[in-house]
Every structure is written in structure tokens, then in C-alpha cells.
Image (cartoon, rainbow, N blue to C red; front, side, top):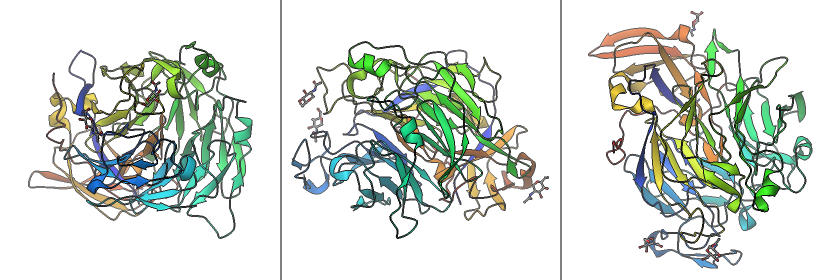
Length: 533
Ligand SMILES: *[C@@H]1O[C@H](CO)[C@@H](O)[C@H](O)[C@H]1NC(C)=O
Ligand SMILES: *[C@@H]1O[C@H](CO)[C@@H](O)[C@H](O)[C@H]1NC(C)=O
Ligand SMILES: *[C@@H]1O[C@H](CO)[C@@H](O)[C@H](O)[C@H]1NC(C)=O
């Protein structure tokens, strides 16, 4: 089965200044972090595109890539993909042969990244990356039946991934294929949500519901799809206001943290935030940058009669990223406050992240965080790493690596955001998982050992795929956090200053698809230590 185990203790914020800290980890990783995925071994795979011209990092061992189809360079001796080692704070260049620009992906059950699609010579390619000290990408030409560019991938209960949509693709397919027969299945919902000449439904927000169906949000509305029968089993109401939330009017979305109670997940909720008002993209192309949406819609997708509940963020945001923090809060980070996604169409970077606390009452859910100084516009990305930090990189709203003479220069830096639970004042409250059952079975006990006294208000969370997800274009595919049944948290014993606990794993693969287990090390790398400037 899954997952990343989180052990969380609530605490009260001690400082009065805005929460959250920032630190630059590396001034340059050589490429612009357009796509990021954390792997189970604490490496982050990062890539942009092969036809951006020369990057700022050479391929290893003097290698070069010759590609007659490349639209920028026929012979390129620079890398467009790197592996970042979280604990060493270092990068290693990788060789990718075909263009993986604006693609999708998911971590397979064995912990390798299965990346799907891209552009040009790479649009039908599947690339697999299994991390080790010397590993590199393996490419499977024609792994996909259709070209997939701006598609969304989601891991399924059987370990396959479904790849949904993409430019001019109103259908879905599976990788690996489910049968030998050609299997591209049409999805009229993607035609219905397509805005002529603008799109507004690319990179749809897709989540695996606990009944095994898929929630798919595109533009301003959603369906529940039984992908095995190709049947829409539920149609959700349009979000009030009717404004678009998907590329290029890019908002973001999360499946809110789920809770197992008495062995089941009763309530499954989705939160969609930000985006751009109707007409914003056409206006941006004409040089008028309309204010981004400051609204979020929240819906109980498990409800028999679901309704959107609208909320207002402290500020508008387009191209924001929404991440589930291990304490169950949602971080909204990156993006701009006017215009839309796509090249030079965004303006006014939003430097301040906000945190959304799903369990607070409406009106007291948002908390503004300390700002970063770096604009993170189109083609920026963010991922959570196992020590609880959020890595932020990228921003490249140009066809090439332009470092001067542009409004938002290509950004090669890698930064970390430290949510307030990493404040030094909380260090005594942060439990550290020392050991855990390594082969977890659905519905069975997990035993874990941690190094702190028990605390009354304790939650144990499991994050799918080792707490990892594929982040690009403001959406984190496969992001999922599940709090285990509190009734089943049992103290087993106390020995030599450490506590042994038992909890119960999620009931089925519908709640939590199979994956690799890992748990966060409390260690924060030396170079990545909280910078208290
Ligand atoms: C990367 O940028 C630095 C600083 O501008 C430069 O010295 C170096 O040669 C560049 N490396 C590559 C491979 O382009
Ligand atoms: C970006 O750089 C490329 C190559 O140097 C150049 O052709 C292009 O005009 C630049 N774009 C902008 C917006 O300056
Ligand atoms: C979990 O807790 C419930 C309620 O106390 C109990 O009925 C159930 O047997 C427990 N499950 C396991 C696997 O221990």
C-alpha cells in the first residue's frame, strides 16, 4: 500500500509576526522547475522542456543530444531535467531525449515516476524514471495512443494511471493499457467544458473518490466518472459565478484531507481556489490584465445533493499552487494577481502564500504568510518534502531561457518555504517517527515508534505515494492525505524513552492506491536549515 506517515501534534502559534519563513536553497539548478515530483528516496525529479534552447547546466560526461525535430537546437549539450537530492541539497543533470513540455505523470506502485506525454516528438512518449545514484530516464516511444499535452494523470487502484484530456483530446486512456485492444475512450465532458478559442479546461483537476470513481473538474463544473463503464455517474452544479478555473484561466484544487472514522471515510470534499474571470485571457492577449479571482469553491463530492460553498481568499490569485500540508492545512502559494497563465499573460506576482484551515469556521480559515521576494509566475512549481518544507522553483513565461529584457526573467533558483510548524519554537513538539511497519496491509494494524511523549490532540496522517505528487501548471496530480481512525490509535508500550503506537491502515485501495512506504525524517539538511535572516 501507500504512503508517507505523518505524525502531527497541534500547537499554538507563539509569534505574532506573519507566519512562515523562506530560504534560498540553490541559486541555480540550471533549469526552470516547470514540473516537480518527489520520489520515495527523497530526491526530487525536476524538468522543463527540451526545446527551450541551452539551459544553464551541461549534460553529464560531455554528452550531447542530437534531435532533428527539436525546434530550438538540433544539437544540445545541456540538460533539461535534473534530480535534486533533498538531504545533500545538490543536483545531478539527467538526459531526456524527447520533449516532455507541459506533460503529466504519476508515481507507479514500485516508486518509479511514470511520466506521460509532452510536445512535438515527445507527445506520445512515456518516460520512466527509477531513482538511484546513476539512473536516468527510460523512454517508451508510442507508449501513449494519443498525443497528450496539458493532460492530467491519476494513479488508479490497480496501479495503472489514467491520462485524461490534453490539447484537442476529448478522451482518456490508460498506461499501461488495460487490454490489447485500442483503448481511447471519449469524454464528451471535455467538449462541453471547452471554451472556443480559449480552452479553459486543460489540466483538468482529477481526484480518485473513495467509491472508486473519478471526480473531474474542468472550467467551471465537475462530473463523477465511472471510468470502467465510461459512465458519468454524477453531474455537479456549475460553480457560482461560472468563471473558469483551468488553463489558461488557471486556478488550483485539492482533495481536502480525508478522515477515517469507524473504519470509513464519510465525507470527501474538494476545494478549488483562484483562476481568472471570463474573458481575462482574451484581455491579457490584448494587454489588459484583469484581476484574478479571489474566490474558492468547496464541495462535498460524497454528498447526495452536493452544493458549492463559496469563500473569499485574502487576495486574488491565478496560477497558484495548492498543497496539502501534513497537519491538514492547505497552502496556496505562487502565481499572480492579474492576467492569466501562458507566456507573458500574467502580471503582479503574489509573493505571499496563504494557508487555509479547512476545519475552522468560514471567515476565519485563511492566514496570510510571509512573502518570498521572487516572482513565481507561469511555469513555476511547488512540492512538499518529507521534512515538512515546501520546495518552490521555476517561473519561465518565455519560449527560451531569457534572463534579461523581460518582465519576469527565467528563474532557475530553488527556494524553500517553512510553514510555521517548523518554527524553532515548535521543535520540542514535533514528533519524529523512528520506525514503522514497512509492509502495510489494508485495514490491518501499523505499529510505529516515535520519540516524544504522547500528546492528547494527536493525528496520524498517511499521504499517498510516499507523500508525493506530480506538480505542474498549478496542479498537484495524485495529491492525497488521509487521517487514520483516531479510535484506533493505541499506545502499545513505552521503552527506553520511545513510544510504540498502533494504528489501523486505510480500509481499501479506493481510499488509498498501493505505493511505497516511507516516513518523514525529522532531519532538515544542513544547507537547508531555517534561515533566520
Ligand atoms: C550557467 O551560468 C553561469 C553564470 O551565468 C555561467 O558561468 C555558466 O557558464 C553557465 N553554465 C552553463 C552550462 O550554461
Ligand atoms: C528570449 O530569448 C530568445 C533567444 O535568445 C530570443 O529569441 C527571444 O526574442 C527572447 N524573448 C524575449 C521575450 O525577449
Ligand atoms: C478500530 O477501532 C474500532 C472502535 O474502537 C474497533 O471496533 C475496531 O476493531 C478497531 N480495528 C482494529 C483493526 O483494531
